[in-house]
Length: 57
Image 1 (tube, one colour):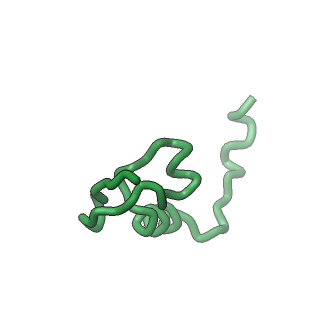
Image 2 (tube, one colour):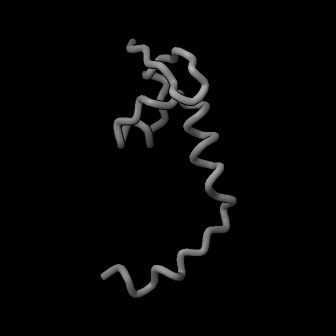
Image 3 (cartoon, helix red, strand yellow):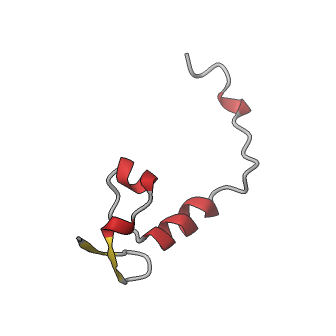
């Protein structure tokens, strides 16, 4: 069990509770609650990525 300090809410949290996505990118700066709040604050679920069409080969 490892503890870390959340830069957003300033609370100590257990890194074993990190989300799968946090573990992939090895992010221990945010607690899982703040991570979800920050990640989902950038999307409403209706993101249009059509402007990227043709840029990815």
